[in-house]
Image (cartoon, rainbow, N blue to C red; front, side, top):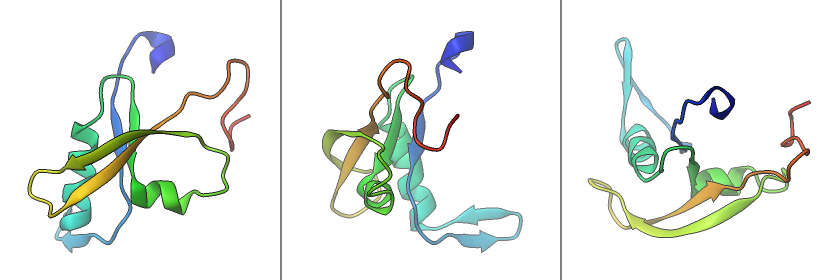
Length: 94
């Protein structure tokens, strides 16, 4: 998206979701929305759950610290996905 001048923000979390007809809900969806809200334009931000799930993948992360996510108990560690070195593709990409 950056290449065509559009900035997006992406937030990722992993967890169980509740199917509600044609919709999804539950705490994992709520956390994902709050993690996304913590991102700035151009960022890809993940919860510590996602960071732990991709351990060993070679993806780099920058610690964004603990965050209180509205409507979610406790503090959540959030990480930004680090840009790969110029000229180097991220793991899984040609």
